Image 1 (cartoon, rainbow over the protein chains, first blue to last red):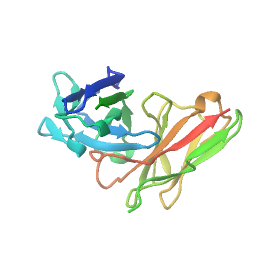
Image 2: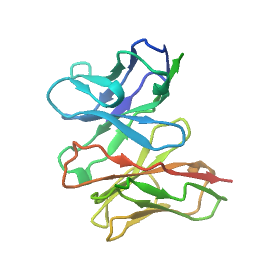
Image 3: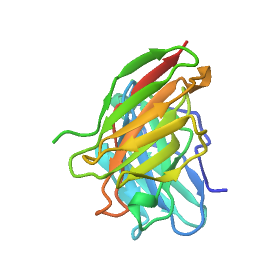
Length: 117
Length: 115
């Protein structure tokens, strides 16, 4: 079965320290991978994506993610965390790439990131 | 440029009732997907509409139905509400012209509470 796993329910980091939020996936073919962030009582905001090419992708708010095909991982990273980064983060994979109107997204269960001052 | 808008923002219903949620996609988008996000969980795909037809469906019962209008807006209908239907319902839009490598754009959702 195709799935996305976020093994950590919560990640706690001190402000200024680097952060990593983990994501692994199990899909057939070449996946399209995404990270979204959700603030309280809001919808999901797109952070970054991996489609093809360079394994290190850069996104919004200083976040980046590294695609590792052999480990089927797509971990989210930031060199220096801010208190304002505290939110719920979701990894997602898009199935059946190619025809957007027939493709759906599978989300991980989410990781709550807490940055302490 | 308005993004994805959903209405209402909050809704309280009782078991057995029916509910309709509404979504207007981002300008230029023609595809609408609906997701259910239970408390503490990731969004679960319900179904997707394109050209006024349901194109894909997740593992949700027939009590969940939808519609897409010629202006690309969409409705999600849930019949015979159960306590377990309490969740945040998210609408996401995308364009069939830009390919599936583009992210979906999400609205802020409708919080549905079943008493």
